[in-house]
Length: 64
Image (tube, rainbow, N blue to C red; front, side, top):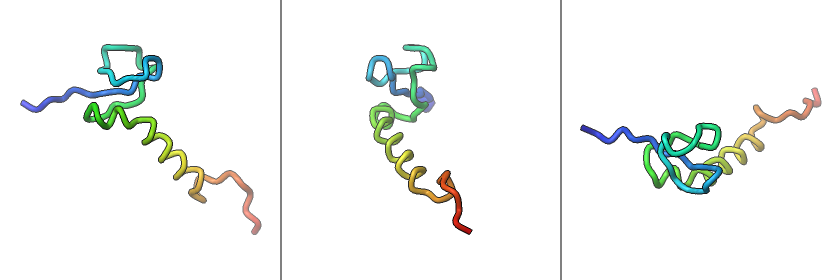
């Protein structure tokens, strides 16, 4: 049977945890592995950079 454990980055403790370790409001995730949970802040930063530079998510007025 495959391991179905989900992993989270805990914003309170700055560590990888499972769902039972802290309340959901303190978690980023779920992630499929401890490694991907450990990279959560990098993932968030990369997604934010993408959204900030994507014209579909740009709040500036169009000139036309």
